[in-house]
Length: 297
Ligand SMILES: C[S@@+](CC[C@H](N)C(=O)[O-])C[C@H]1O[C@@H](n2cnc3c(N)ncnc32)[C@H](O)[C@@H]1O
Image (cartoon, rainbow, N blue to C red; front, side, top):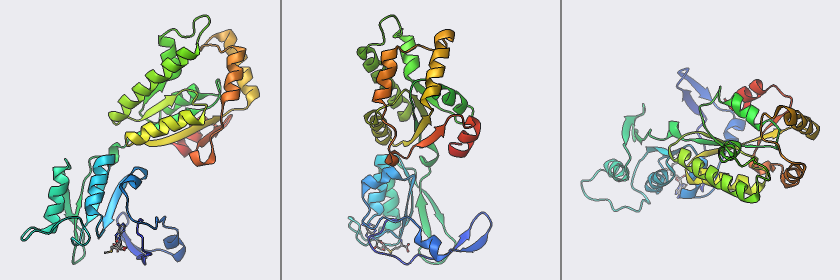
């Protein structure tokens, strides 16, 4: 809810699935998240859908914001009050809104709600089901990022951006490598791939260390720019387990080996996700399938 003025919320509504009337408790009503301020376009990125209920003065802004952030809208307009629009004689306000949205490339649909009065609703449904998600997997080398990603593909259809794969392709694990230059190149290829997939509305898993806050911030900003949701997955594996896996890999050579100094560098570089990054934390040895079912499906 976005409204500068404290409104009295209706407590009664009808659950369309059960066709039953529902009465909310005071506690439920008071816990409806609310932004006490005016609507601003930049708020749009945090929401999947914008709904304007007799949203005086914000209808045009909502349409513009949806255009900018690739979101759908549902508008139940009543009148032209406070809109930056001159009411023209013989021109219907609802039609003006539909034309305004259509001129911005929206295919506007119309329906009516079952009450008397201003009950015509206009809406779009071109983006809601298509908002892509960027999953950033963070965790130390050998923590299990690739294992998680391989399990995840059984639950979610996504495109993969993998630093390891990019490095493999360019043979960056050869003697004396990867150098800092290799890492930089791999990341810039990865970010280009990421942008291409998000632009095409694909869900993406970014499988790289993303050890530093700033790297994760870059990915969050890319997600924001392309109108995608962002989820941070933190694989928290104890260090003794990481060391054990590394020793095992030196024998099996399943993946590229990191030198002692590279391992130390990773340990030093790693910045645990902060609370405000709202990470979804997987702790080894929790059952991976169950964890994905509970957190990501
Ligand atoms: C007709 S009332 C509708 C209230 C409520 N949405 C409903 O459906 O019952 C219009 C509301 O728009 C709010 N409002 C006016 N300008 C606004 C703005 N720029 N951003 C957000 N809300 C605004 C007013 O405070 C008022 O509560």
